[in-house]
Image (cartoon, rainbow over all chains, first blue to last red; front, side, top):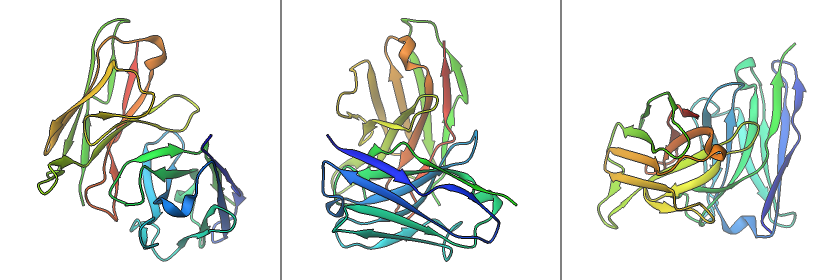
Length: 121
Length: 113
């Protein structure tokens, strides 16, 4: 069974850092475009970052560019999101999502349960 | 940036009745070389992650009941639930994947009974 499990969320002070992980099982995540999508409390979905399954190109939303870094470890079948210089408006549930195919030009076929990041002093 | 606008923001439909949610894109999502519309629909139930319902504007995702259907092309799209069931109470989002690196979602439509 294919599955995504996020971890690493928590409470962090403004300006702090955090690394989120997304462990994949049941499939080889490096063969697919993998993404992070966040959802602030009571709000809608906001795409944050993706890494292509075709060429490992990385993509970022303007709101996080320069502060967040997406990466993956093939040996651990795990996706990461490094969050730096965190702000209060980064507070959200962060979901890991698997693309339908290797190409980034496709829908998000599978989502993890999410991990909550709270930025507050 | 491509802006996705859903209507209505919320909707109340009786059990067994049809529910229709609209999504409008600020630019065409139709890629002429393959005649595909780069538009997906997701369902998010309370306390759960989103679930893919429809991709390529009209193709149902794996295991999605056939009461869910998607239609439309270029800039105007519709998600239809033909006969509303209690378990369909959720927020529904459209998403474009035509212009990466900026996937964009609609603001969501809350469906209630």
